[in-house]
Length: 346
Image (cartoon, rainbow, N blue to C red; front, side, top):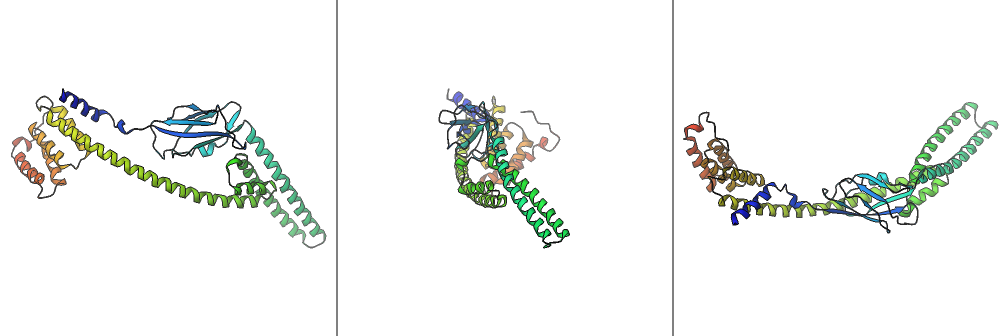
């Protein structure tokens, strides 16, 4: 009975595909409505790849359960949906990772982002046009007063038109950016940039945003460094747990080999030895015992290779090193290890 139980245990170790160490990871999340004063949104369908689909509750909270993911892995969106609404922060969520922090989903009424983008762009265009008209009128007055030549006037008009075209493009980009920003959850720098944008100071808004990006990148690097340090600590703990489990598996397998009669379990014992060597290919005792097993089962050529491995991984005066040399000398005296001897199939 004990042998049967031990056999089942070892077979489970061999063919369990290491799912012993698989773990379920949960990712907390929260859904809010754009620029609503952090108002929670219920009834949003949340579907990510390799996670159980879920729906946000009355407090906007949801939990994603991943079965085949590790901390630090990217998580891929399949769908985030609620009738009459659209997802705002798709770009950010496409870069999301499992890191233990709450996943924030921002929604808005369908069509609102396009509406805001057009509204913001219209505001900036109004100021840009007014500035352009004033500068153009100033050039006209200078030419009338002969303060600049006609050629100079035309050159400055061309520069003015180019500047206007460039500012309009920047205004369009900023209109898109600000239409997607949730002002409930941004720094004062972003709000200052938006104020400058609404006043038509496109260059001023860009300068402030560049400052914000630098600060944001620095914070992100610090945050990422701290996350990596924590992940390395976890990885060290996981390695220790895995190494300890491997040692236990090795002992159980060695015990199993000793308990099995050789004449009726040759194939199984061979598989168990191969499993031991996969756990640790440099383990001298396992290498040596496998070579002895191969000699007993008359697989002399394979045994010779294994004894060579023992010589490779052991010290010159080590017991196994010396025994391996003696066994190699003995094997070489067997005639069929020198000729083209065809070993029996295990």
